[in-house]
Image 1 (cartoon, helix red, strand yellow):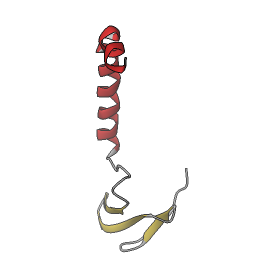
Image 2 (cartoon, rainbow, N blue to C red):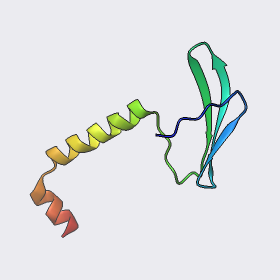
Image 3 (tube, rainbow, N blue to C red):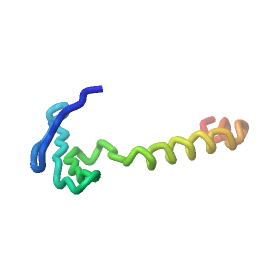
Length: 72
């Protein structure tokens, strides 16, 4: 993991097209702005983990026969 120190209004650039800017620092909270192409999904980690769990559950509940008919 790369750890960087940034101040308010300072940014980090990732791969030429993603910019992460520190917008505000209040106590132990940091407000971050992310500018990325619309084709790149950006999630808070807890939401991303919920999506992954829901996808795993959907796969478990999938009916293999129905799936093979659809993909046929």
